[in-house]
Length: 462
Ligand code: SAM
Ligand code: SF4
Image 1: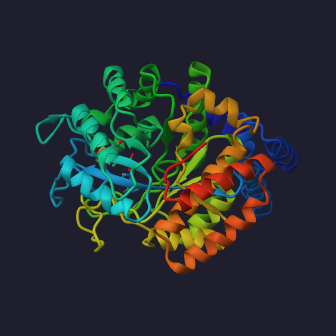
Image 2: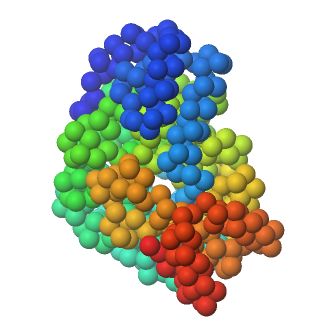
Image 3: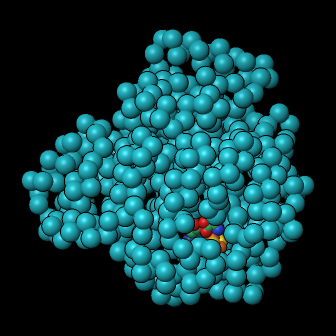
C-alpha cells in the first residue's frame, strides 16, 4: 500500500515486543512536554500493556488532553444523505449485496427537513455521510454532494443555521475536490479502514474501493485541491490494532512531510454488528475495551494537536472515559440511515448498530456534570484558521483563550435556546466557574458577547 512501509512497522513492533519500563517513562516525560512522538516511541508505548503502565499512559494522556484542549468537547451530528453503494465492504450494512436494505438518496428538500430537526436540537456542526456511487438518482456524485452541502447550509430554524459541514465520502479526483472546497466544506474525511494490504483486499472484494492506493491517495488529492483540513481513520477490528495504529501514524508522517501539516482529525471507529455484514459474528481482530482505551490514549500522546473523534458506535460509559483521556470531538444523538432523524428511532436500513442512544440534551447534561464544556464552535474554519495556519497558532497555545471564549458563547446560546431546565442550571454553573479562568481581556470580550446574546444576537465569534 502506498505511503505505508509494512516491513518497518513489523520491525518496530518486533523490536519493542517486550515492555521496557525505563523507556516507557522516558517517552511519557517527552509526551508531557506536548511534543509529538516518533513511530519508535509510539511502539514503546504500544508494547506496555500491563496494568501499571496502562495507568501511567492513561494519566499522561489526560494531562496532555487537558493542557491542549482544556475542558472543551466539540459536538456534531452525522447526516446520512444516501445509502446507495456500489462497493461490497464485508463489514458494512450498506454493501451492495445486502438486498434487505431499501436504497434511498435524500433530495435537497428532504435534507433541509433533516437539518431542521437537528437545528431544533441545537446542532451546529454536521458530518455529511454517503455511500459510493457514480450517480445518485441520476445526478453525478460530485454534483449530488455539492447540492447536498448547499442544502445543509441553506436550512434554517429560527435564527439558527449549520456553521460547518464536514464530509465523509468516497475518494474524488482533484477537480472534484476543488468543487467540494468551492462549496465551503470543513474537513474532508476518508478512513483507510485497514492499512494492512492483504486484509484490505479481502475486506473490499469489489467496486472502486477495492483499490487501496486510490483510497490512501485521496487525502493527497484533497490537499492538492486546497482542502487542508482532512480526517483519516482506521476501522478497528479488521487487523491487529498495534500495526494499524503505527501505520496510521506513518500515514500522518507522510502528510506532514509532503504538505507540512498532518490530518486535522483522526477517527477511531470499532466494528459494530449489523444485518448483512459478514463479520458481525466473527470480528477478525476484536479489540477489548481496555486495549481500545489505551490505544486512544497513545494516539493522544503521539499526535497531541490532532483532534480525535469518537462516534455513537461506543457506549456512554466508554465515551465518558475517553473524553477524559484524549477524545476532543464526539457525535451526539446520531442516526445512521438516510432520513433517520425523526422523533422515533428505527433500526431499519442502518449502516451499523449504535452504542449511545442518549438525546443531545442528555449528552450535554452528562458532559456538564463531569466538568466538561460542550462546544459548537466553528470559528477557526470560518476565520480560515485551518491547515498549517491552525497548527502554527495551536502549537504555541495562541488560540486557547479565543477557543475558550467561543466555546462559552456557543454553550450559552445552546442553554438559552434549547436546554432543559436542569441542563440550563448546570450549564450556567459551569460558565460562571470558567469565566474566572479567563484573562482580563478575554473576560471583557466574553461579557460583551453574552450581553449581545441576551439582546437576541446569535452566532458571534472571535
Ligand atoms: N462510503 C464511504 C466510505 O466507505 O468511505 C463513506 C462513508 S461510510 C458510510 C463511513 C465509515 O463507516 C466507513 O469508512 C467505515 O469505517 C465505517 N463503517 C462501515 N461499516 C461499519 C460497521 N459495521 N461498524 C462500524 N463502522 C462501520
Ligand atoms: Fe459502501 Fe462505505 Fe459501506 Fe463500503 S463502507 S459498503 S463504501 S457505504
